[in-house]
Image 1: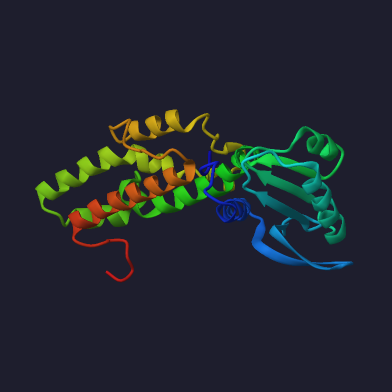
Image 2: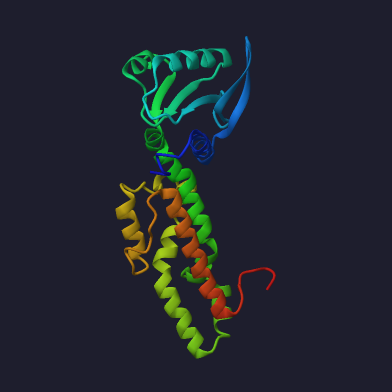
Amino acid sequence: MIDDPFPPDWRALQAGVCRLFNDIGLSAEVEVERPTPRGRVVVDVFATDENSVDNITYIVECKNWNSAIPKTVVHAFTTVMQETGANIGYIVSQHGLQSGAEEYTRHTNITGLTYQALQERYFNVWWQRYFCVAAASAADSAHQYVEPFNSFRECIATTLDSEAQTHFRRLQAKYAPFVLLVQIMDIGRRIPQHLSEPPVGIGLYKEKVGELLGDRSLFKANYYRDLLVEISSKLASIEGEFNGLFGRNIFSPET
């Protein structure tokens, strides 16, 4: 899961759906007023795919109820969809739709989903467009310290005393596998045929990534967004070790 599939209230659910849509490249907002023939209506989440030819629009109704959603809610939402002219509609809830409501939506442009199912629906896109890009960006600075060829870095390294140079090479050997792996995660943006494959499960993925740092239990997150925070924090820590060794960030234009 990207995030906790059971948010504490409807506002957290609404914010999570909006954040997910923005992460994958849509332009999304919460509580948006839309005009209809009968006046204006406020929708929980309104999103537009500005990269699509026809500016495909999405409307999401968020229901953080402890029971399945009945047909009456779907009927009301159908009217909103028709009168706002939205292309795709989602009713996102904790327990999905009642059977009658599910049947009603079968041949419409409305889909009832749990928050977990919505995350699963868009996980691969989120992984490629958000997780990989953000992780690679977080690795950029540390990457300059461990990449195989960097003449500027090597020139600065010669100014270190022999003990510091030995420590520097040990840090490179220790962190290079992890940093290099993370830094190339967004290679799919430049070479689409080499997209980073989404992991099959966060438990195994954490172990494999942690193993590159010598600790399979290093990362504790239960959700991928939290894991991204942990990975980014570790990369910042690694960069800090190198900066500390040199006494500064040798790649900063201000030094």
